[in-house]
Length: 341
Image 1 (cartoon, helix red, strand yellow):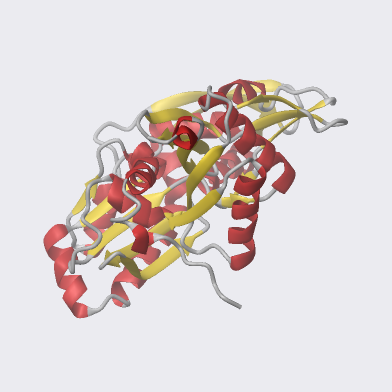
Image 2 (cartoon, rainbow, N blue to C red):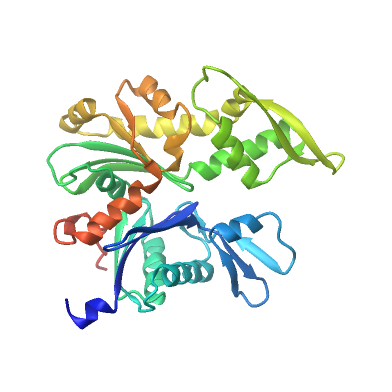
């Protein structure tokens, strides 16, 4: 180990719309926090980030702005995203030295401009070398699929901003569908449902909690009712509404149907040899959206394929990016290559 190795840290990042996860070589996953930043509106100085910023969300005063610099899986606010990456790296890199190598997972459908934004942010945050990897590829590696084999695997990675559907073989993505419909859109659908049906305004955090608690893609064995607090749109005062899990499923149905259609379209474009592999091996679900009750069952019913939810689906992408970081030689072919203009 040279002196340079002592003073630098290699980091793998799952820069998600909902959560940012970081993996440090030799230490494993060292950070898993919401991709949320609270900053001073006047100076743009970061006041809090991650869990602390999430607690402030929807409760801030006029001097503070709480924002999510990532939208639909890509950087929406360049300056704040860069500050967030820099602050998170500083938090996990106690030695204080800059990161030499960073592997960042991005949606498979990102444009060249969006890729450039991610690279620039990481470089401005101190990285010497930046490698990008597609999220479904990272998720496949993270759950133990041998991506270099001449066998087809299908991954559905449902995050906060995007749903990534990909068929992988020979260290590459054979075909893919990147939908900007995922956890955030589902939360939004729940918020709109309450507005329309109950004249009740609820916040993003409340919608997220409802989705996790009673949201489902198929009828539940026992349907439940919950009390939801919000602001009455007519009277403007706080009120409570009682809703059932049936209504929430109805609110989520359109988004879930679009995800299922995306899966079907990807399957239609898959070469027959790989289709046979997928029939044998099944489809793997990763990402936070994989935890939605009955989603695996719904996809199974509509495609007649075996569908499995990965163990610890929330960390699949960062674990994969970490494996790639630990063994760059083995996985050199999986990186998103730079276009030569």
